[in-house]
Length: 179
Figure 1 (spheres, rainbow, N blue to C red):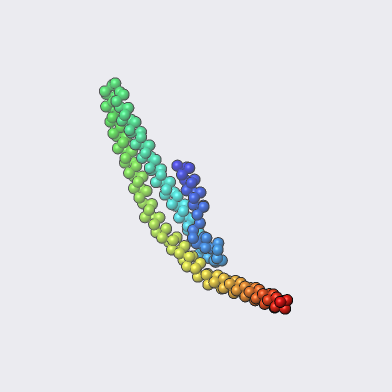
Figure 2: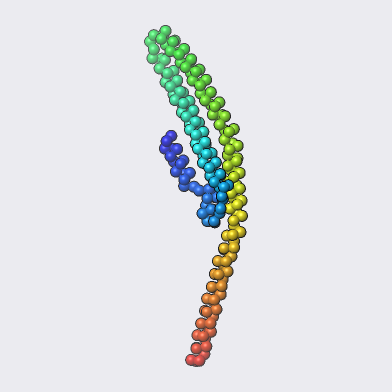
């Protein structure tokens, strides 16, 4: 379980959101909105991690309980004393009933997590999309920069083409004099 969690954390670090990649490419100022988004997103991620831990823990308790009861059931046949076997069977039934009651209570508690996480997820996503809108808005500044670079490059290319044309004319003129 720890290895799976570690793998998930490593994978999470490897992948950046589209917004993070975009911000690396384009100069975006998020200001207070970005700070609030990052704070709430970290809190959401922590909450989701804790929710997953709760889920995994309940699953593990259920699995271990089932394994224990299966083993107990199989071992009942090993009794030679019928009275002890009958008492152990009653204990097994009662213990199973109590375990199911406890696990059901854990699952009911877990069921209350999602309705709390959903609105938080919605709000964090809403803030992220507002940042995305600001990032796209910043493309105007980027467009001006790109246009400037393109215009400079075109001017340089035109100068180079003219120089090449002049050189070719000069070579042709010299060839005409020599011929």
